[in-house]
Length: 488
Ligand code: FUL
Image (cartoon, rainbow, N blue to C red; front, side, top):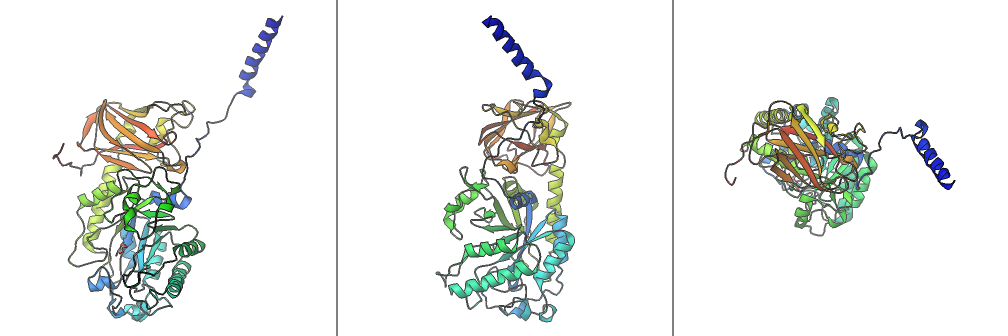
């Protein structure tokens, strides 16, 4: 009798579980994020990939890099100033944000600040009625390019410099002028440079940052220690081969050169999301000098692979000349640079491959299959392995007809849910061709042995914080890449 009773209960349980009304019809949910996470503004910033910097001021006319602060404003005379031309160059280069030096260390202001006369007011520009910040921001707004500003804390001109209260009041007054009167500002740039004549000068960074965030809602604050974006630790445009967007802000300080290695690699265990920006000039100097010319295309590509291709944003300085224009040879080099990037990355050889993975979260058709690494949304659609697939997670591409040929591999993580990957390897027909550590928003591998041919590419993820989430993968051919045969 008891057995019969048990049998009935068993059959009823089966019926209950398989009755249509009790089946799970819901889609598989996305996995939990692994914190820390980027803010909306940090994600937008990361997707820009390349940003322009324009160093322009009295140094442009004195052929120097650091002005003394004693320059006569009358020397600032860009007779053909055309900021629209700068912005057009940004657009042609695919750049969506340009940052201008509103004030450099010499203290000369490119806008008519009411707190000093060391500015465009004393210059021949529109007989003292000019405003480069206004022209620049208006040209950018009219063309749909975002703007950023650099207001140097170190001021070699102003008499208040070195007097803590007076100078911080002056500086904060200028911040209010710049952030109240020129529309949206998407990035503000602070460095920690100080005059050796005023070693006790204290910059009230915390007050400055609070004020910046009060005045501009979607701004990223750049400094050695963020809080929006961190310095990469050098001015060569190179990030570490390992580069986490995470770091401990409490270990950072602004203007302290000893932490450059930490800034360069970030910190796997960091509790703050603070991605790195790689600043470098297209020429040797930050300001325009007649004797200098733009870097070679191969150098710019090297910088691109070592910055954008290492999970960073490239802040490329393009200095306007004494006429007030971007020089023709810089424009030419930027055209070549943009065209090279398009040539390399427009075609993805993986698009014509069949694709499979070690496992899929929620099974086939769950929305997390490996095919999602080939769609055009690079952030919120991704391949996710199943939670229990923690030994050998891989994704594999197989050529459907003739063998493929490539020399660049691009991997991108769904960083909206955190940066996860610690270690990965790339195999072609079973042979290891590249390996690396972090991936982040974008990792580019230029294959050190040049072009590989084959039928099967497997990318293995062999260490991650939580499961890896891969938003995009590309197999590309870079015709400009000729690895040095020495040391192979
Ligand atoms: C540094 C400055 O000292 C350089 O002149 C330049 O502006 C560079 C981008 O930042 O801190």
